Image 1 (cartoon, rainbow, N blue to C red):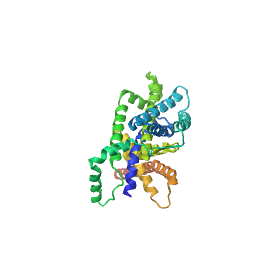
Image 2: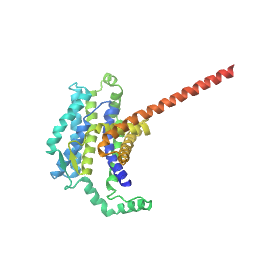
Image 3: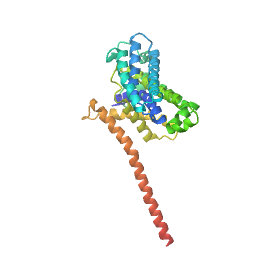
Image 4: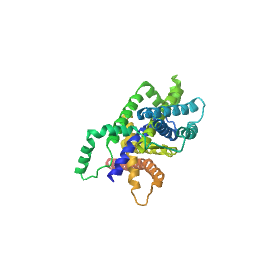
Length: 328
């Protein structure tokens, strides 16, 4: 169980980067962008193609983010300059990216199992440090089984994800970031202040898909392959991460909201892993599990809020009755 949960946290912290990208469009810009299901695969495809053709893994990962940024900008251009509905623009770009991703990979699945990835390079540097032995000794002392692989990926990705979170927080507090947030709240008001909303939307959607593609490139290197269908249902996963995080940790500030998204992504992967441990559930039930998680995350806060309001009304009536009896 510990090994499977370790893997869930490891992948969850990478998917948190994708969830931050989805957060930028759906929550900050109020832009229902389905491009992410294509740009995630684009990131994986560009990374795999680059590594297979001898490009250093770090450069390949950066190229994945650049490709995602371009895809997001094209979606923004379709919406702002082409006057296409935001949802439809995302669907059109997602559809186009499917063929583009096939072109990039040359086949539906591109393996990197015989190639050196970013994580392989990390492990080669990490191994001589002896930190794995220290961590495994600690968990063995607690009676927990040792993991069969290194802790390097998890620790690195925690630092990378936190770094991206801090950069996102900083960006959203700059003048441009505040304008992006204002567009999501009231686009007409921002236009009345002579702000170039088209450029802001294009940039915001581009950055969002850059993060999504970056996550795709990292997941491909973690799994050792890129597949043209690995982005199916990704938007639901991103929304589930956001909804779970917001429901559990709140959204009182940008710093808290982005942290909630990261923790929501990790918790989502842990919930799915636990669900798949149930005997009657199979790997093919993952989409159903995701849908159930989203429904529960959406309904539970509303049920709790309704009960609280009902309890307040009952208490208020009781106080009014008590006041009336005392007056009499």
